Image (tube, rainbow, N blue to C red):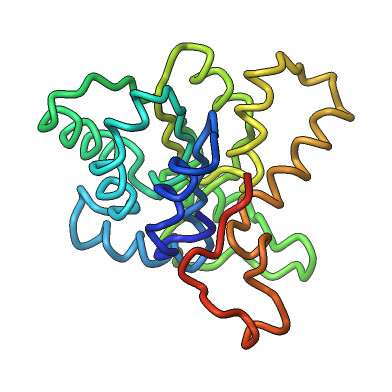
Length: 221
């Protein structure tokens, strides 16, 4: 998938015909985080991509049978709550699944400290906003790779670099290290293409009106 609210058909399509080892879904954007922050302010258990949990509910048996790993940033601003909801679905279906999480991106507790430090916008020099609803760091791919190496079937993150969702599995599969700069660059490029979902397989086609059907648009493998 390429965004929160994207078609739910992508995951079953890839599972059915993609012969994939990893299913990767990117749910987050700055606007998405703002929406999730608003939800979490109303409900402490909210703030994650609920449609991910719903989708996994129908696909978990097939994912586990085919041993397809899942890496997503659906945790949004409440990674632990997302994991809890997913495990609840698995338990209801009497399925055993190991779900790992990547934490550390949420900087909400440090906002006061950042404001007092005089931190300014790096290009314009504008002061740090007096009020923010969320503050997040962009984490990288190595924590994802570590979770996979520890046997996780599904890895849920909060805010990570979009390409990290693909780069993490590549690091895990091929044993890349932080010194393999060329390979990491290549994996990052692949990640940026894959995380765009159907945008990278015709979604931006200029002659869109000539396409007979968009139902089975196809997603990148």
